[in-house]
Image (cartoon, protein in one colour):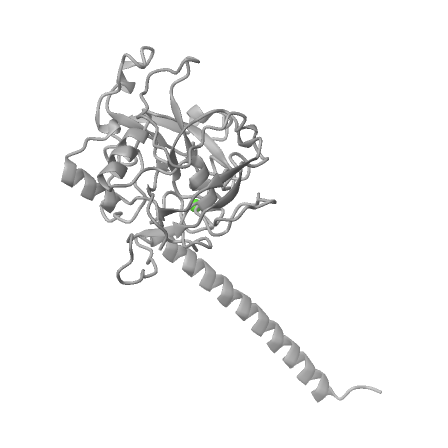
Length: 350
Ligand SMILES: [Ca+2]
């Protein structure tokens, strides 16, 4: 039987309205998401949750002890996985910020390594312009050619330091809550000593990043709640996480312990000397080793310390080091624009 014209027209109208409703909803959702991302691009401060009044160690969280499965299976330097006991400790809930570092510099008149000439004796082969005070800065290449070579995106920039993260023409004005970068192990140690704290060992750092859990099957996916690199490194950064470069601390959800940005944003210095695997376990639980020097080690390599957590430059196609078990060596006297730190305190549990 032929359907009445009116009923057919009504159904068409209802179908069209439903389609428009769905499309409109999708558009609104997309707009809201883009708007949120846009706002995060603009963010210069991300609010941190209040800590209880009378907190024993303000700005720190308690990390209970346990047995850590140290390491991972993605890159050779993460192997072998070792079981290691870690005692409890307090850890900064964020990376040290520019404001916090500025307070230290103001109180002590400290001059960072990047603000001093490079030790020519330690680096006899460096050209004169690389002996000037400065730091190594990431500069995104404009062409895809030669993108396999780090020299295409890392430049030694005279005048780059913690106050001028990208070089003399840049500043940290308005970026007091951003992670401090372009600091060396010596700088980080000086700050930590001033605070009555120390740098975490690799094991302590990794245990905290894992939320004080012995993870039998660590995650290898690029995390959503971290400032990393989305797109094809080093040429295409879609910044879906809201940030092309560094972010203020605390813009992403904390881990189960309340620690922010353990993964991504800035790499974090540890107090452990770097070795190319966990075959020889150097990670210390409590001892602070003697200060390192930039002189070549017995093997002839420049002394390095372990950095953890990856940075805003970690991408799936190049550096899947946005994982708790990932690690890298960082030259002791080389300030870099993606390396910062946080501090640890050995004190009784709350
Ligand atoms: Ca990012």
